[in-house]
Image 1 (tube, rainbow, N blue to C red):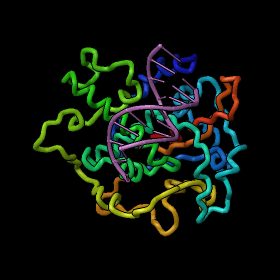
Image 2: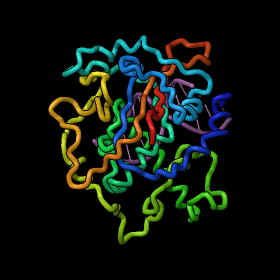
Image 3: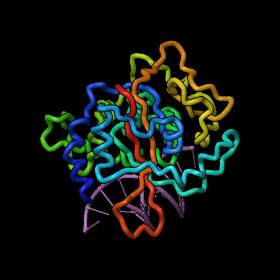
Length: 272
DNA sequence: TCGAAAATAT
DNA sequence: GATATTTTCG
């Protein structure tokens, strides 16, 4: 709890409940290296400014160094950057939203780490990351169920300060009540099956971007070779509006940096 | 692979 | 000290 938190609290609420609602789409986490490579390290975009500020109120600097590991460039077929110490993943409201979105589409039943992860299509996200988050999210949901309430803002003490993040994203109704009959999900569209029922091994979808910094890269680094990105059928769900960058942020705060502490921070890039 | 608990880190 | 995220274990 430092100054950073203070800022967070001060603003997180402002940008949380996005009127955009849940939009199933894919985001991309770009490492600083990539960002730099693409010349998009610092998006002067006013829109994202707030968030960026929030996240790195203290100070965030793109650490291009260190990236050597993953920025191997060798690209295809390499799976080294694995045992490496991954920086702690910071679940931003945006990221969490992706998560909730995925879970919603999959339905609580099929919402397992692996599937969720795949659906999210967030480069750099690991199954464990999701699993961990899911675990916590479930607990959150249980709590919510505890006091059957509107679940919305107007609730009477429905937003424990302990669930800032989770509160940032609206919880699909079906998530809350165990009410059976329809424990599944019902969406107007989006045949998730297609997306989920493929590519058994989506392992590391790391670094290396085969596409030049030219133009735009909606879903640049995704599945490994052979796996074509989009396989949605019928109505596509791509809204292609919110890009996300994942960068390594160095903690300047702790002076006792015995080990370079890096934190993965996700911040939206582009417009939405 | 999933999920819960224990361990760490911040 | 509490919380967030990771790691370990069944």
